[in-house]
Amino acid sequence: MRRVVVGVSGTPGSLAALHRAAAEARAREAQLWVVMAWQAPGGELGSRNSCNVSALAQCREAAAERLRRILDLAFGAGPAGVTPAGLTVRATPGAALVDTARGGDDLLVVGAGSRALLRRLARPSVARYCLAHAVCPVLTVPPPPLQAELDAVHRRNLWHLPLDTRELAP
Image (cartoon, rainbow, N blue to C red; front, side, top):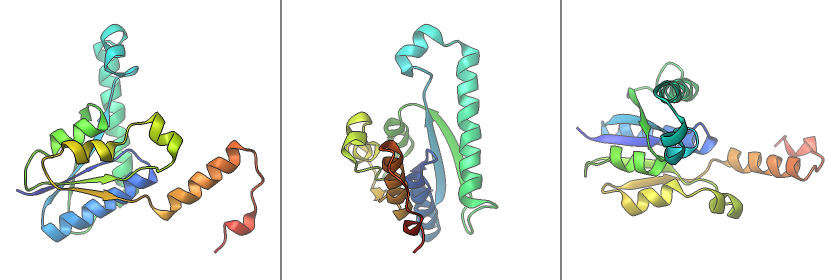
């Protein structure tokens, strides 16, 4: 069975990728797999020293609950024509998506992420990892226009610049 695999994190970009993946799943008559990657506090090296089994179980439950909230936020009663299957994976986001979308007839959908220089330096690009390592086609979805507006508000707050309310209305 063909699958459309999409990674989510709750950001506006991942929600745009989720909606695009649902549309692709409907068009291809494929299953929609929604993947939420999670890691132990402090990463994998930190979990070897400090995390016990109950802490890891709590992290897994928190990731599953976050995935449920994201699916409720994105679809409410559910997208018409496709039923999403949620999957939480303990791994880095790129590795979790590439490992899940192993079939040659799968389609992997990822958000393109922020193009801001500092964010690219601070966090590795999941989309670039998937493009380099996936064995199936990868569809990257650009950030929604709302993301640019949110980034502008964040910069304004960072630099303590006043907000002009006329900018909010079209």
